[in-house]
Length: 343
Image (cartoon, one colour):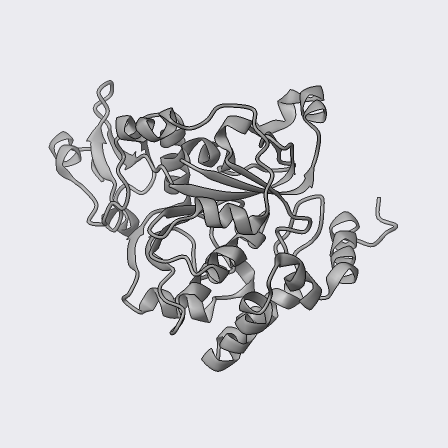
């Protein structure tokens, strides 16, 4: 990108825009949202049934395999939600789970995906089934960088139709995105404008929350504070429910405020087999088994029947993966990565 003013004024990416970036239209949805301090505790099953609808745009919190809302993801697949759009922002195992809804006989859970990082599970390798889904031609896609999707959430959280940034310009990713080049009104420099993204519903796993939805996150929050503020509905799953008195004792620790949240679900080990910082390590053995099972469609189908479709609850899934003994071992690995005597 040369920074030429006329070029910046006309250049746009060729990708489809799946959501409306009109901030005034989004405001209509937020205007009717309840702001009261009401008890929002419910089961994951009820939360997904009430707040995730066919055709919704869904976003998943966390980062890669860390602090993902696994219990909610399983339930979305089990309830056979259909024709969802999805924000593939640092999406690894969460995307792999959702792709299980795009199986013969299971319908089409994913219909549109804003992709940044999907299919790969970082150093663990590629998801064969996620790759099959993405190469099937049945899912419409638009490309972004991870940072671009984070900026899109930030624009929505700020109530703006777009935000400018300097990355992606002159790249194939820009060409395949739905962003546009603009001219800075102060310097004349060429900038990339990315449209605001307001998900219909987001699922976010946190360390602690009270019954109203005030949530604490230990460690990096990634884009989740912006994601919660950008989303029209938010399902929180948490490791622990704590009292509102405890929240008020340290209000600066609240990463997501109650008025962003619609459902609170207490799910201990709810990020498994992902890592939950300061709580438990990722189950690398289980993730490796999942990747290996996907290499053969029949083996993959049997794997899903055992661990997802055959489990009536997330607790049953945990039991099938080794139960409390395995969870305690993963907790030891997180707390003492070099052994119990490490200092």
